[in-house]
Amino acid sequence: MTLVDWVIVVLRVALPAMIFPALVIPLTWVERRGAAFIQDRFGPNRVGPFGLFQAVADAVKMFTKEAVMPASADKLLFLLAPAIAAFAALSTFAIVPYGATLKIDGREIPLIGADVSIGILYSFAIVSLSVYAIVLAGWASNNKFSLMGGIRSSAQIISYELAMTTAAAGVVLVASSFKLNDIIAAQQRPMPILAFVPQWNIFIQPLGFIIFLVSAFAETNRLPFDLPEAEPELVAGYHTEYSAMRFGAFQMAEYVNVVVACAITVTLYLGGWSLPGFHPESILGVALSILIFATKTAFLVWVFVWVRWTLPRFRYDQLMRLGWKVLLPLALVNLFWAAALEMVRAAR
Amino acid sequence: MTVARFVFDAAAAVAVLFGGLMVVTRNSVRSVLTLVVAFFALAVTYVMLLSPFIAAIQVIVYAGAILVLFLFVLMLLNIGHIPAERSGPLQTLLGSLGVVLFAALLLGTLRGAGASIPAPTGETPQVLSDPASLSRELFSKYLLHFEAVSVLLLAALVGAFVLARREKQP
Image 1 (cartoon, rainbow over the protein chains, first blue to last red):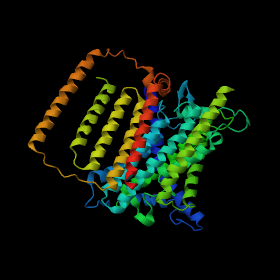
Image 2 (tube, rainbow over the protein chains, first blue to last red):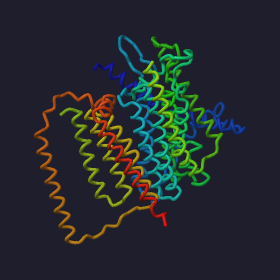
Image 3 (tube, one colour):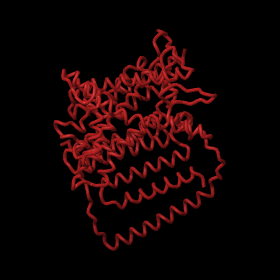
Image 4 (cartoon, helix red, strand yellow):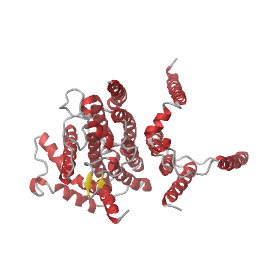
């Protein structure tokens, strides 16, 4: 490999990983102003135009505040938990293609961190490790509210992971590949009937899309499923004892997780960077494909904010019942539906 | 020694080290966590053996689901530190004897097995590295084995359910 190849690899792997933590700043602004808009308030509007610099001020505050450690905490695990949260959040995106293949000087540069054969399974593996951050934070704090948050989180994530992976299995079945590039390619095929509709998985498996999105809310601990922090009951749940940038790491991980969950949903169900009839060849086209991907993801992120300030929180038993008795059976139904469609396609 | 070989050896060493730590650690939550590290290191060795699918399943099922359940139970029952129990001289003697015998058995098996494995040819069997061909093998050549295992798991599930509900009957 020449130097240029090395630079390209580092850029395409490192750029998304560097952009994601910075996204937290505009996202907290969107969340707080969005909440204010929905609740008919002003929201933060004093620092900078439209209060845009409020989040920057908050970030500075987090970096400079005192980091308190409870005297009875398990010191090693207490410090490890936010690190695991940040690690898991930042490494999940590696297998998501964020644009069409770039062709310069005879080089083909796929815009993806690592195009591995297990594709989406990699993301599920990392996401399943991220639960340790919350469980450990809850346990190591040595505080009953934190512990309750950690216990809830472990039960919740196991329940919803099952429905989520089963729903995604339908998508994998249609594309017959775990690779997200292949899944996007499968969604670019024309529909057998109603040819003007793109064959996005949201149209052929609407049930799977809803299950995946609901599970994504639960996996990212967002309202209506934010039981691990549930502030009216548990103070702040698993991060009650955290302050300064250790708390900031959890906050960053939550927002990065939301963006990544939206990016994966866009790739699995909304055609990723593609649009019907759009085949990018030039550099401009590739840039446009990145923009399309970002726009679709941004819309879904807004849906996350929208839902958070619209729906009330579930009770714990309702949450478990929804996961096991509703979403999981429906995900199996969706899998059969996808398999039946594939059989019809193969028979034609 | 190549980089790949170094990573493999390092991951294998971490897996063995943390597997040992898991037995020695007195704090039950930390004990589970050392096992998580051991499983993750094991997954890394699978990746270095060009079997990413097995590695992903290892992390999703063992580290991501089963050990989270362990933690859930430990935290729910609030089992923290386990006090060291003093064992009698007979227990110590028998325990040490068992360890020595098992180590001898393991070493003997490993030495014997090493001779029968052909030298690596440098190319990986397609079946392991590619999820599609792995599943094709699983659902054709090994279908009976696959189904037998799934029936076994179902039986275990039903058994656990029956055991858990027994106390409610009069």
